[in-house]
Length: 121
Image (cartoon, rainbow, N blue to C red):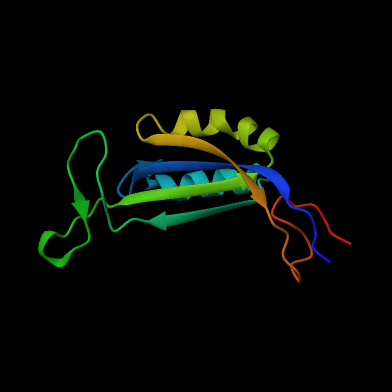
């Protein structure tokens, strides 16, 4: 028997690996604040190549090592909880790309709860 999917909102914040907040990596600050806010989950993904508003391409290739690679922080929870967290993101990320996407969470067996934190029977 398949458990129905739950609608959710995915928040993605794209920043530079070297961006900081209070002497801590910005991506780490976002994750810790998301955790403190009780959001269902957050992950950080390090890019291997990319560019942003500066149009400067950052890459992890050996001949052009960059120390400021793109980083994506992804947070998923209910729309209400993610939207309530947006003011925190706005305060932390003066530059960078922030976007929202509707998604569905497919509950997995053996986890005891789905990604929105709701217990399953």
